[in-house]
Amino acid sequence: MNKKELNWIFISGCGHTGTTLLATILSQSENIYCNNIENGQFLLYNFFETDRLITKFEDDARKYNKMYILEKTPRHVWHTDFILSKLPKSKHIFTVREPIATINSLYKRTGNLDSSIRRYQDDCIQILRNLSTSNTYLIKYEDLTSSPELEIQKLCNWLDIQYSPDFLDFYKFDKPWFQSDTAGAHEANRNAQLKNPIYFTENVWTDEHFSKSFDFNEWYEVIGKKIAEVFGYTH
Image (cartoon, rainbow, N blue to C red):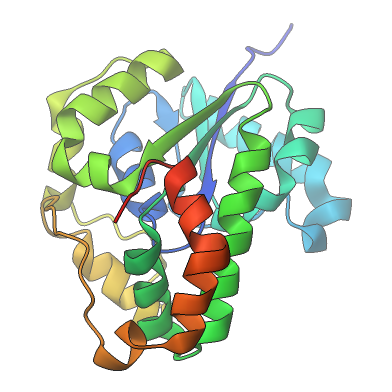
């Protein structure tokens, strides 16, 4: 007996651009299997386990009678080509956010401005490369938080998933993304944020030292501005 073919959905992108929020919303669908963990099946350290992990997740999805498998690992943005070689019908959603807001958020978390700039830069450029491949969809954090119903409806149409307004009630359910027994301060903060409705905030400088950083301003004039313009951000 042939097994029913399943549909894989991947969410990836730079950290702090809404990947967890988006995955939490979509996982409300009764047709989607998602175990609320960044599984990283296609990261390099899992190379020799890839086929086994694909089979495991598909078996789990069938066990719960799901049609879709949702995987959210931001670093999968670097492995889209490999994923498509294994799962050619998979669909890939990339999240982006305005550079100042994203780098500031990363910097607050890590305390390292250089690594925050580099991560944003490299992940965004990788997204631009990936958008030339098939089955890719770009969603901006600002659009998701300012018009969540419209953006999720459009995304569901692209995914061929039935939309429900209940998707946006995710915060009413105690379904943490990161496992509480292994969660650090960052993960705990993310789980706390998911207990609130979606809210939109303007992109502002929130750290005086960061806003006056020569390193950031120099980078932004050379590279950051180009990334911002490609994604439709202007200052």
